[in-house]
Image (cartoon, rainbow, N blue to C red; front, top):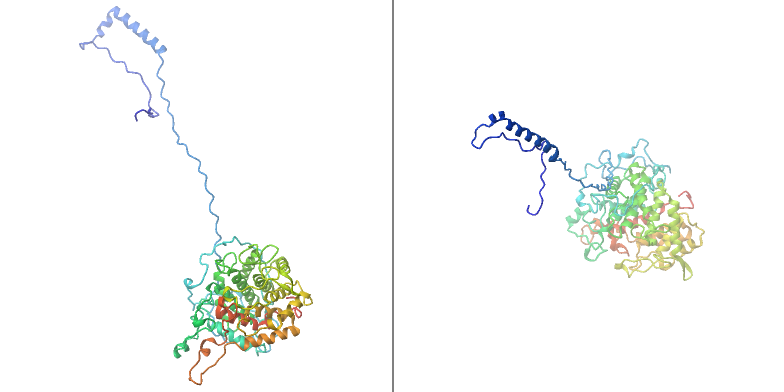
Length: 562
């Protein structure tokens, strides 16, 4: 290029030579060698030879070209560190077994003469009961939040805080096993509720707040008589409930079955429980959390599902369930605010007594099931929160929801419902179950008496209906016993038993089957302060749990080990 000096690399093996001498010739071409014989010519030639020799030593020779080997400089490439490897989603292979019957016959191991020891078959293999049912064909596309692409966690949780052996589950909940001959309080009513839940479970194993009627197996008669089911809990059948609660509803429904002593291994509801357990296993993330963390409900959902899985493990002793329950405990412990309780999210720095109550209850079930974790620390921290928010209000100790002495929470859609001492009931239950107070504690006695005041006893009055409060107060006051429990139990039983949907098999006037016989039998209307979030499934599951209070947890005074 013009204006630029050009460099050309010569071949490495090329040598440089001077111009080659040419033979002398005359201008006419004749040969002049004959003149060499002439003396003066010889002298001239000698002079030329001498001059050439002198020139050879004086005139510098052109330097031989130096071959420069050009090496292309390479910039050092710093390799970027590889992305962290994501632990693969845990794949559990379950051995195949025979399809579970929808309506298995009464287990022959459960007899009228059953003793209080565990009813178990010594030949039973724990891994046989969660095999995929070949008769089922669930589709992941139809599952709500199935966590198809599970990750290690959006909140960075994980680790082995809660691992360990345990006693295989058998023993912690053995007293719940259904015995032949009945004899349990309101057993026919709890059985009717369980039948309703069984008949409204989705074929994939979960229960839905919004599609429970579509999932019903009781629709054949409705079509025959052209009767459209309308849920009294929602005007004109408007399903305004929250589908985000479906995971928690599934855990609560499963709790109703295991609370009555049924699991995926024994009894009439093996197929129902097994499908629910398989679904919960499918939606558990690698960090142990059940379901996604897309909204505030996930902490409630997780605590309830963790409790259900722990109780299913504690009741059945099925070792397949242990790692699932262990991971669930890990998540609960990591989610707790250091030194205090729980709130929405993972260690958010704020606390509330409601979420903390569910977590304490879940940990109680996990401990009873034989799962190993540092319950002393988490119990100490939770107790510190409850003490912090329990202060004197109008002469009695009141436990606050999210601050000292504050009222309990209400959904925005239920602000007209009256407040009640639900946080006081949670305090009593939690402090007793954690071993942080005894029946003689002054705060325990005072808060128990408040719950049985006339204004706070269960009553089927529009703005007093609060199934959540009735559940927690029943758990707490059953532990108190005596006249306190008798007063509460009478009002609670009347409210629930008198308003459970029952059979009315024929309408004599019109001579046809009524809708109560078709779809509502055994359930409760979604009409309390919290039913707008969970609908009829929530109402039925939690009221069934309340009616099971006699055998969900043994009295502390009778069984101090629990």
